[in-house]
Image (tube, rainbow, N blue to C red; front, top):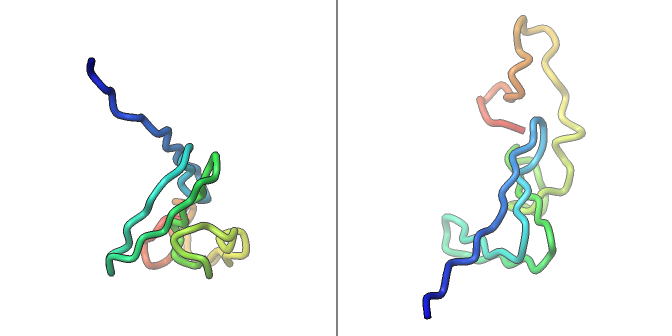
Length: 82
């Protein structure tokens, strides 16, 4: 009897977090583990969340640099997605 691995759905959003379906465990660079048992967990990609790595919708308050021509790439000035 073969046990197949559980596949999790990961959805990328245009201007927001990465959505991971199903319970997850995230291991941070310092070894700390963040566990979420939610049906869908939003992972921060803009690094502004006060609950990092969990998204707290801080990306919605981001001020876009409208003076930079062509800066509609969805990236902040440091090149990180939001």
